[in-house]
Length: 114
Length: 115
Image (tube, rainbow over all chains, first blue to last red; front, side):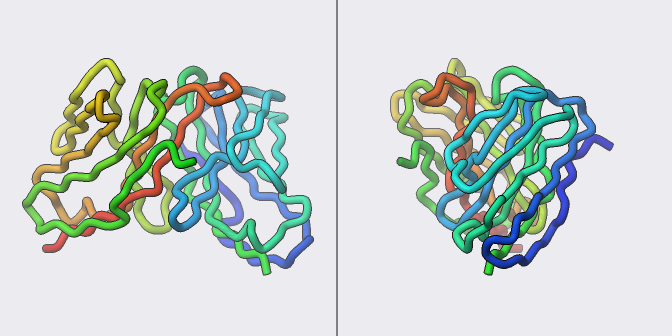
């Protein structure tokens, strides 16, 4: 089954404690992206990757890091989480090329930073 | 600066009637538009899209209309069914300020179909 998986699905942590949210896709997609969803703000792109070892900032990259060492994995790293990073996070992937290519989203990770 | 706007946070429609969800955009360089549907505790799923060179695209009960002069698009669902109750995101594709392709999402509209 074609899918994007994220782990963990739910996470409560404290300010400053480094964490990683994993994302993996099994569709051999080149393009992967991270979004956060906040009330009244919709989905905002954090980082994206056009292919292995190629990553770039989205609209709200501050406080986040990513890496793309393998095609299927695109982890999101919060080196020192803060309460304003409490949000619902989605990983997505699509075929390389135009972003109007249908993006497949993971189920989401709800993060709470105390 | 919200380049893609969905001004109605919520919408309630009777089952069997037409649901119309609206979306406005400000960037005339957007050249492709998409609608995504999201159920609680799930990720968004692609619903329907339209190229900027067209003014209508239809897929079963779902039709998207694009009015480029007004920078407005709408999603029509006919007839509405209880399973259509979800949050709908409008999205637009184009070049970012850095010259890369990106998808810009609206804030979403929560559609509730009343049985």
